Amino acid sequence: MTSLYGVIGNPITHSRSPQMHNRWFAEEGIDGQYFPFDIEPGRLEEAVRGMKALNIAGWNVTIPFKEAIMPLLDQVDDDAIKIGAVNTVKNCKGRLVGSNTDGAGFAASLLEKRTTEDIKQSSILIIGAGGAAKGIYYALTKLTPASITVANRTEERAVSLIQSIITPVKAQAVTIQECEKLLSSYDIVINTSSVGMFPHTERLPIHVSGLKNNALAADIIYNPLETAFLKEAKKCKADTLNGVGMFVHQGAMSFNQWTGTRPDTVKAISRITEELGGPSC
Image (cartoon, one colour):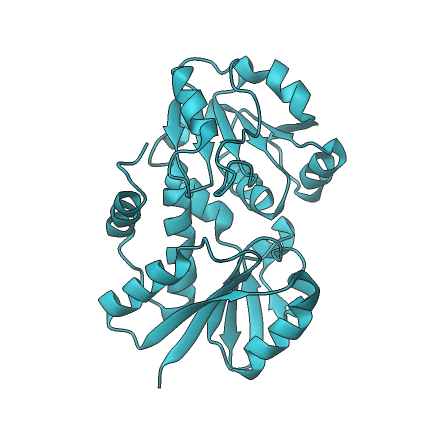
């Protein structure tokens, strides 16, 4: 009998998760199918009951439900509790168990651009303070960088993020305007917001004219492959990292939780990059 999987969010039509996971099912010889579920924001609780009733074996969670879904699950693992967001749900014989692979997926992608020693010596700026930012912040604290700054239009939300995760790493919260003034002091700048995502591809999360040469500008958006943020960063002679690697690695970690199988991430990154008009930036 075919096992059913999926991704819930709103909007969800842009997601490439179905193509990626269904290819992995085919490549690994697993009888599974993965579907997108566009859920109205006010109907999340109803949707979760429906997923459980239909015995959906597992699903991913994306904007805007990563935090709201937590109290609707039977169990949430320790890392996801600390992060305060869930992006992966596994149906364990009727018990819904939540976890978070976002941060670990980003860290795996980042380590393809910078060594652990590089990161230890880096001052890092995270733009945004939502569910994805929480996972990335938590994963980065484990790599013990020199410092982490979280910038958000609402500074209180950035403060809340930092206070929610206990770490010896030096951390501070600033406004978007403040981080733009301090931009030359950061070695790694990460956009975790949705600003610049298709179809509003011309938008910038921050003005990047102050970026230092050879800094790494990373964006978790993968459609478009090269966001306006990354294009402008290149003009400042910064190194860049798009969101394909994080997307693939976090998805592979979810796939492994559901099936016990580790798919080929290198092949998936190459394939998605080509489909989006690569090569990788």
